Image 1 (tube, rainbow, N blue to C red):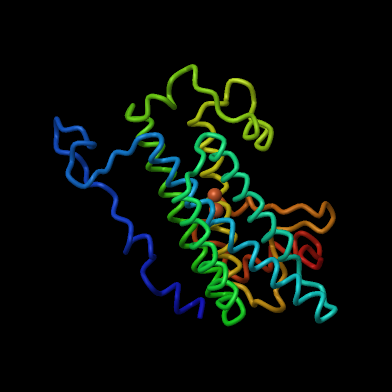
Image 2: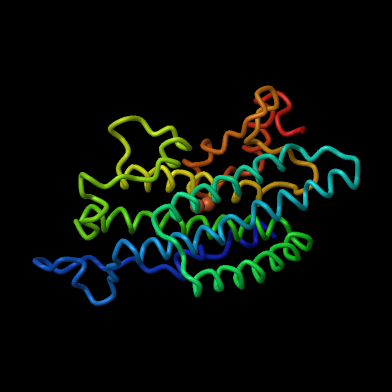
Length: 257
Ligand SMILES: [Fe+2]
Ligand SMILES: [Fe+2]
């Protein structure tokens, strides 16, 4: 399944068109299909995106946890990484909701979307976990693309509230990412979040390449019991299966928890 899916064009190339290069002397924001967005429009988009993004890791981690305790078997270390992914997505969401409080309509849409998406993921993961990881890999690719577009708009001066020297990002973000003094701008925050999304992309594409029952998770070190998801950030297409197994072996039994 994974190989067949990998042979397909990436979803991002089908669904996601980058704006054309502007004609000489024309600002790209003036081109017809470049949609400049305000700070609050970006926040609506981020909040909705993150409410969806927090679901797959929780479903996959939850199902694998139930499977482990039902079958009295270890899980090859996948559960921790999956639950950490959903925790990380929830922190993205909580950070953005410090800047934007959703109204009633948004809350209803989130409620409805979560109900549909959670159940679809639940059934989908029972049927084909590798397909679900592949799909999440593509969704994370879209998330990377979204945050990249936001950074581009910021760099073009289209988001003055966020580039204003007096703008303060939420304290919870400073603590969570341990952001150093002098590197606490909104641009820095989006860079941190985009790096997380790039890790999720690589992790999910890698997990989609693996045997869902027997292969160890290459992103966990059993000695420190810590996930190394950041390793996947530089691997947009994920690790090939043999590469992943080699990495898991290099961690001396990593992924057996
Ligand atoms: Fe996220
Ligand atoms: Fe993500």
